[in-house]
Length: 332
Image (cartoon, rainbow, N blue to C red; front, side, top):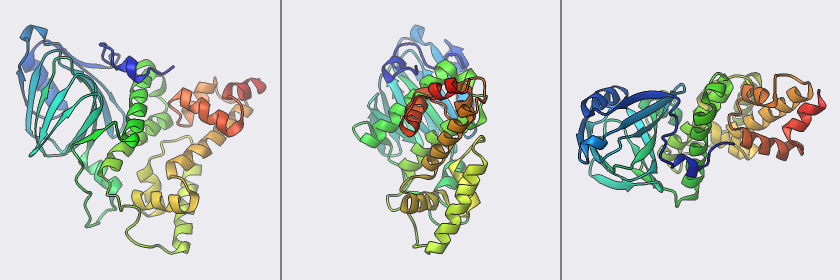
């Protein structure tokens, strides 16, 4: 079973099976963390003897998933940050974050998103621990508008609250994914489709926060053009069920930007491209289980991009009326 959000908020830092840094030296921690994130100044404001820096990391493809704590009150001053977005999901404790002229207090109910090259200053409480999601600016911007477009994404808010149901749902699922990595990372990171599925989900949060509300479409396409592009997208999905399926790649094959592709699927299929892909992949898993393929249900599910076994089993039962294990047993 994947750990719950409450399990992740215990003192043990998730992803400790993927250690990057263990240090009691502020200078050492500042140098090594600065190499991964942004060069910065680190000031210990609490008890220096309590400094116990712990940094863990799992790198997907375009997304780095990290967990970090300092063990005592610190000030982190990166000045003008690096060329990447950084989402901070507090597991416990509190941090005061200033970016430009805006300032926000973040805690397990409020996340923050630091923008590229933004002047930043942060104060972390001694009990503060964070999940950090890092993505380069180029990756995010490619997903928001096509090459050569003059448009630029709207400025993202510095913070988002769990009181917003959309934020709460995504945040909880992100914590579940980190818990899945924490317990079973070595097992499923070798499955290319599952790894890409997780990354696509995490990237969706960045684009949702950055994307303007009127982003469904910048023009009214013809029905014929929609049909041709949708078919290209579907053909690509069906041909790559056991491979990494990224929204950007599907959109490129359909010759549209990711936002336009999502709007097309919403208009004509009442779903998203990735939800459509998930339904097709569920059918592919069903057929594979009926034929008795793979070493286990988990092995087959991972090979088709399902990284969360509990959620996969529930989706399978809804679609086929029985647990996947029943289909598996019937084939043996």
